[in-house]
Image (cartoon, rainbow, N blue to C red):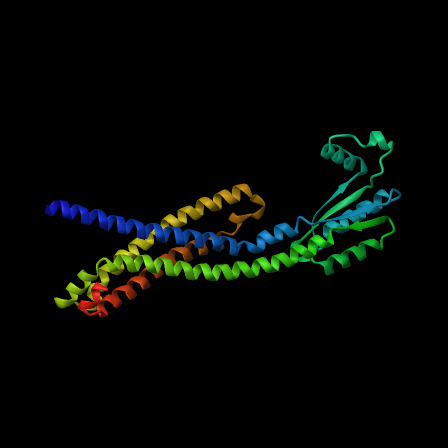
Length: 292
């Protein structure tokens, strides 16, 4: 009978520890993934901004030397990320590939123009800067027109500001929730041993002596949960880097390492503080209060 009860108690203890580890791991994993989003928010927004294309349409009378000089000046411009010259023949082939038929058969001659597509650096993708760039380029006689989607640029910049604000708010809120959830799990684990705590106190054990094993065990569970969370974060990071290589997520080893260390330290710190507070609470309770 005693052996059966001991096995039951052991299974119950293991189950309690397992649920604490799972709670810590899940909360830290979600918090870590949110941290990845926050740290890479600028990279993600910059990547979207750099997809905006400024198209420079050239006159048919433009001389080759003028076009080459323009290409060279664009390549050297501080606002240019990349630029590519597209001839009217290449543009016609692109339209044929996109629509599945050769529109030149109906038109007779190629109405398209030679052009240069320019992708700007993210910091220059604002309505004001783009307007200055367009005005400067339009002064050249061999340039017929410069086009870009101004509505898209304004919408993108406004949304980036809103998203950045709400991501920060959600991050702060989620951090608070993470602390409360881990604290709740630790308190439940300590609550199940409240009578042991009070018994040790009644036989003369000091508060620090009673707290020590509880804190050590909780910190161990916190470390295990943090390691599980970090493994999950590493898998997510590898997947995102493979799926979206343009974000260059692994090109920031120092920042990524600091995030991983921060998640690990947070797991240890929260479990330590939560256990300290929980054990202190039961140590200060009177014996008859343990039943409530």
